[in-house]
Length: 112
Image (cartoon, rainbow, N blue to C red; front, side, top):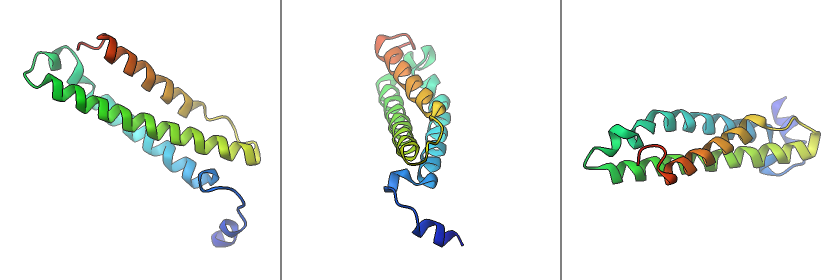
């Protein structure tokens, strides 16, 4: 039964509901990892001799989280164009949080 439903779908790969949900879940998990590595760039992380590696590690995890959140937004917006699905507020919010964290990191508000 599920194979018939997928055969009838007339959208792009990103417009499939499973793809949008997958990117949303992956971006949430990446944000969880980002929150776990946040102390690397805090005041305690700056005092270590490998603070630069901590900074680059945090930037990499932040980039992965942001890319996954953007992919989730793109996928959900393509799905919305087809069937008027709801606006992906959580994914948009996660993109905004990633941008704010990047600004705080670069400006030195996180401890670097």
